[in-house]
Image (tube, rainbow, N blue to C red; front, side):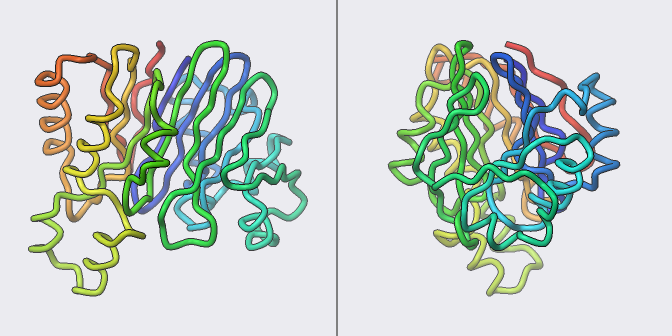
Length: 256
């Protein structure tokens, strides 16, 4: 199993996952050129990707989904609602639609798109399961519901949102309305909320962890790195490789 954060943040999101005999992107929020360049920089063959999974329709998640699918002749996997809303962007693409909450098979993996809370039409997180185990991704969610917690249990690799430091957000330059949106049930998880979620998900088999979708204004990678490493050390349950998702460069490829 391999996981690599190609981009993470409000300017673009793209996660590479390789499990079993299947290689996918979760979201494609960079330009096509930048996506391919970052993959090349991590010795990942873009032409070897088998599909693009879409979490929701915000531009920082679907910017090049259509162009990537057309160039490399791979399908887009998106909910029926997102497929309908993005009809123009996905023109001339093969779309495999799914229902949020209903599992589907894709090649040799089982994909479980589970609903999350965000201010879009039909946002989902994903759990992918193959003979190599489970990997999960949940970003752009205002709260970690009981369903989210249940779905992400038992994963070998996790991509979890850690969007903002609450003090930095509330004392920062954003207008009040935007602050309220970010910290609402349909916004983004704070660092503290992310660690609360991780507390429930940590287990001896967790081997790779990406802390994702950090705000450039209301967070800092050092905060997240220190907090996550201190938490994992204190819990003494697991010692996964930890990567901090970055807006401008790809993480190292974590192979487990």
